[in-house]
Image (cartoon, rainbow, N blue to C red):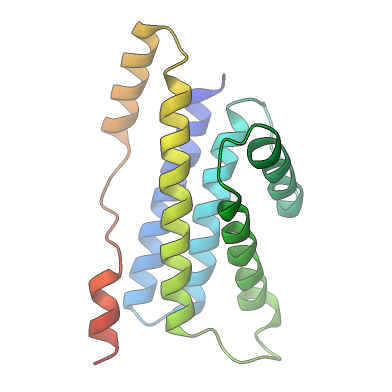
Length: 167
């Protein structure tokens, strides 16, 4: 089990979510969408790294393996998370590559992306916490305490911000 590396990816996911929210507040919808996707990507990378020593270089490969192993085979996550990740991926591609030909990304899309990314991250945190319980009791207590102390829980959801933005 590659627990420590997985925790590093969770930290990066937390950072990306905080960045997405900051960009949303600064009216940067594209930046918020891109960081929201990378929140989910780093979160599912953390799950994958619990069982493997390396990651895929292609994002769609990781998403496919995550869906196959953790959703369909192990049923560790609800099917909805697959749709959420695919939506985040699609809007990120649109923001990064297709936006020159289409309408710009809106703040409403950014808000939805942040909310979706936060849901994925929370589901992954729950899964990793449950997986950590399979470690020996002393390992479990030490690792969970170190993890909880090291992950910043400064994530502020944009729930109240949405109503302020629409005024």
